Structures are given as structure tokens and as C-alpha cells.
Length: 235
Image (tube, rainbow, N blue to C red; front, side, top):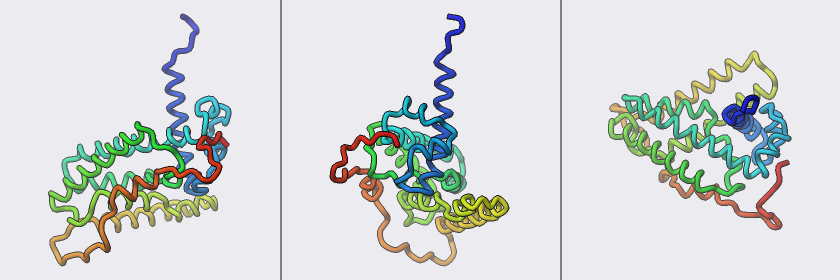
């Protein structure tokens, strides 16, 4: 019917809003942690709070959606990395790209929301893809043999948040941003060098045992506080 809006433009707009919310959530959660308000995320994304109420009934529902978008981004990047012929280049580009993306910035909400079946399936696929990247590099002799894919995942999460960049951004010191970004790039390069295998003197063994899935999965198990009904409204 002429003049009747199609679903495609509305769907595209919703996807754009979700991507903007994901970018905003990474920044707001980095600054405010699990106490970040949906209103602050919406304001940073330039999305009206009213539209959020219409699309997401609760804060948990919004955070579940943002988590799913983050997982999908991870998996797409891992698949692209596996398509690179050189094992080290593929792994290094994945690690560098995920750190610069800010992967792991949603970690503050771990354990505060229910993990849906869709989220779990995407997370399992992400583990499988990263495991394939790591194993391929290890078999090629370019990755140190005592590094697990959980080590790499934790490295990405820990370096994904840059306190230096956040401080410079918070102070509105645009004149320092390039230098801060370069300093962060150097840290990433140092971390990547620590992953690489060498034919020269043996590297010192890593302390302790590699982390396991228990560390990652248990953080997402929600334990309701006293009086928590588990269905907070958007705030």
C-alpha cells in the first residue's frame, strides 16, 4: 500500500540504535561499572529514553541484548581471523582488534543478568573459534606452548579497558588523546610479544595453572541479593 512504512527501514534503525547503545554502554560501564544507569547509556548513545522503554522492558533485557551484540562481534572477528592464512597474523590481529574494540567492557554486569540460551550458544561458539585460533598458532610453533585460549581471552578483557584513555577522555584533553592511544598500542604490542614463541632462550614458565571455563562462566551466574525480585525496571 502506498505511503505505508516498510519494516526494513524500521529494522535498520533499530539495529543502528542497538550499535550506538553498545558503543555507549562500553564507555559508560567503563566509567561507572555495574551501577551505570540506562539513562546515562541512552544519553551517550543519543537515543531517547522513551524509545528504550518501548524496545526493552527492563535493564536486564537491554543488557542481554548488548551482551549478545558483543558476542556476535567477537565471533565475526574470530571467523575473519581464521580466514587469514598466517596463524600468527590471524591471532595477533584478532587480539589487537578485540582490545581496541573494548571487548570485555560488559564484564561489570557479569552475574547480574540471566544468561539466555542464545547468549550461551554464542559464547560457546566464541570459545570454539578462539580455541581454533590458539591451537592453530600453537601447532605452527608461533605461540608459546603453555598459553591457553582462556589466557588469551582474559588478556583481551583486561587490556580492553584503558584507564589512560578514559582519563584523557574524561578530562577533555583532546591534545593528549593521540599520545595516549599510541601508549596503549605499545602496551598491546608488548603483550602480543609475550605470547609469541621463540627459538632462543626459553621463556620463564607462566605462574600457576591456566584459567578454566569455571572462572568465566561462574561470573555470569546471578545470585539475587536479599529482596531482589530479579526484574528491575529500566532506570
